[in-house]
Image (tube, rainbow, N blue to C red; front, top):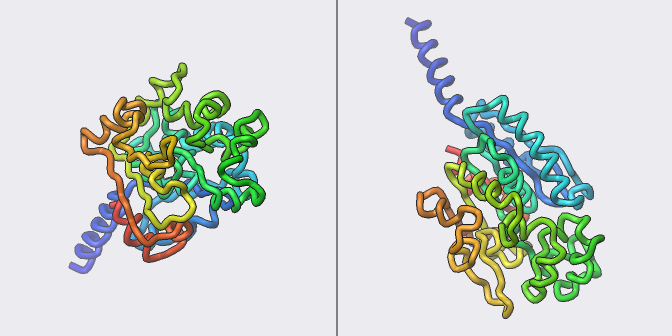
Length: 285
């Protein structure tokens, strides 16, 4: 009888473990895999047996390298992970890592990602002096375009998603990354970028008004400034209305989820146990 119950417990444990998809995590700017260990630990504490891949590429200052270079390297890593887990994984990217992870999806037509979680990421771009001063102390938002919208500026990841609402002509002329992955500008990959997003079973976008770094914070939901610095919500912007990357279709099918969490600063999303347990972990069930 003891052996019978032991077998039942073992089978229950195996079934519970197999219920959790592997999780792939991409860190933010100027940090590395170590900065995401609290999320890794909480996943494995609450969901024992979950396989977690914590990306360790482009740590520290190397996170400022050109966004396309980072995307192509991460793409190769995700392909190897998908070969091991053809039934699907969950992809979670924090801050800049969420933007890069989304671009990885869009450039990988056969990706195995079932659920993508963007954790306070500048999906519509970034335009804020406080953010700049973390990396470029002498720059201010109003004049940063003079650096970022140049050949040299486009060698930096920040320059690749710097979206100055007052210089959209220069943004479209010089930016080699964000206007393309958002299909603001057509390219030979426009269809690929949209179709790859539509492979997702669920797209979850998380942000909050007290973030303090992502500017505007609504960029985490694909909202953004217009030319008079008013924030236009995602569902009123062309990227949604024209379904440029599939957001409208995902929303229509119930596969798009926008989560707003007040009271969370940017560096708490992944370093505060209470935030991780209440915001992130329920999305992995």
